Amino acid sequence: MTTTDWNTNIYGQAALEDRSAPRQRVNIPATLRPSGGKGFQTVVLDLSLGGFCANALQRMHTGNRCWLTLPGMEALQAEVVWWDSGRVGCAFANLLSPIVHDNILARYRGDGVFRRP
Image (cartoon, rainbow, N blue to C red; front, side):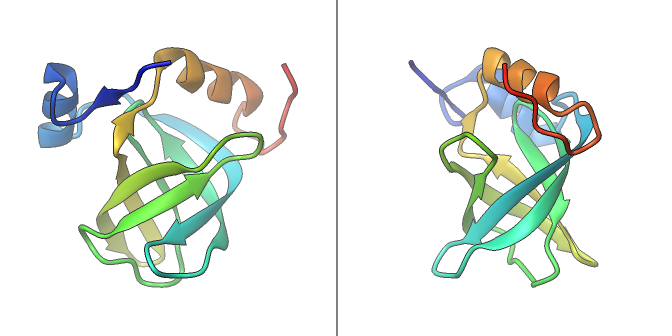
């Protein structure tokens, strides 16, 4: 499986510049690990092909790397874009595949309940 890199993909550049990738509200329990730090439990609040917003009570610094682990998936590398009042917005290092994105949305219909395919 190939991934799309933000730096080499025109869509990725546009999404990164104006953060225009469509977002879906979700409620997904996950683990978020900042670079050099210990992972902590979080809830992903919105998800797009390009990134996510999640709860993060500990301050996360813009530009730092982090890894998001959703149930049943490998960790996804991301970069912190913003942190404010216990929420963090991050851009994935590689765009999510539309198939993976749709699969995640199908499993979590906004209620935080994981559904096996």
